[in-house]
Length: 296
Image (cartoon, rainbow, N blue to C red):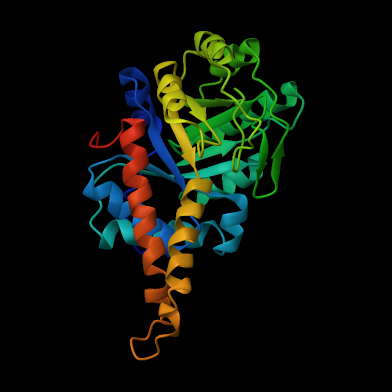
């Protein structure tokens, strides 16, 4: 398939390895539409911050498929003159086939989430994907244990990762490893207390790879900072962006600005502008905590 723009995308290997070596974490931000993508890219450029933008399978379907997302992202990288490192990542790919489709469309990084499968099947499929990903110089994230909660139809019970599995998974050549350490997707319930730092230390000692914290929205800042020191090198953000966008949009609606016909407050560009600004601010706030701001 011919592309209008030459892709400026990079895989995520160098950025997460640099983060791992220097004890900070790269922000992975899920996107849902043009506003989401443009706001994250502009904020990354303005703050000189390397970034991973990602789509879940659900968001991918919503936006019209991998070629649409790749075309939009590459177009924005070109027209906005984005020079910081940007990786486009498949989040929680549920099959090797989906990961391969995204790679063929132009994604530079993919996650295969085989945590719902028996472990032997999980690692077998990771090895199959690695052969294909290496041919295309695409980075790969795998998962053991499972992340609690639900994200775009992907449900996890919150099983803690097994250090023996982490050590074996590291031999496949993956770039980074996600593992359950007590983290959950979505908003954290009142009963939730803490990440399991003992588990994280054991997993890190076993795999010695950059590790990924899913369900990063809502974890107290001191716990996030401690997790980074113990080997977390990529932090996934989705819910926090959605809540920021919702709150800013609600404020606009409650102020009845959308009903101001004279100012054309109903124009979707005006209607979505407060949420767009809130996304940029959330990016700035979080990347400061992650320590990746200015690291491009």
